[in-house]
Length: 124
Image (tube, rainbow, N blue to C red):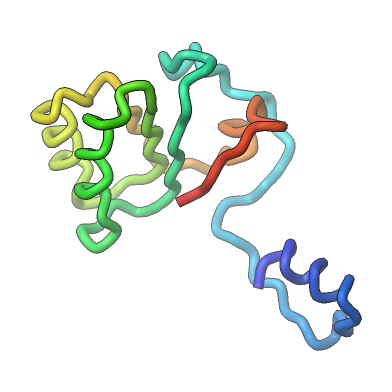
């Protein structure tokens, strides 16, 4: 379970001895924020930030078409894998390439989201 869930259950009278925290693959360490300017993303734009390998079964090819309906949203993809070239091509074909940032493998989750304190965001 996550550290968050562990704290939740301990706060609801579970013994810490009954729980095992399995860390996420992305370390959460305080890092200087990566500026949205560095990723050519407007400050007020909603951002979707999946951190994942890019195999076929993750469904990134189904997310990209949604950008044609969400013209003010940006998709920062943190990951590498077999579909990266196809996803770049699909983004161009859909006319959404300007909304997508391919970040490569990311070990800097905290830096990517440091400026998002107080904002609502979801991780895919």
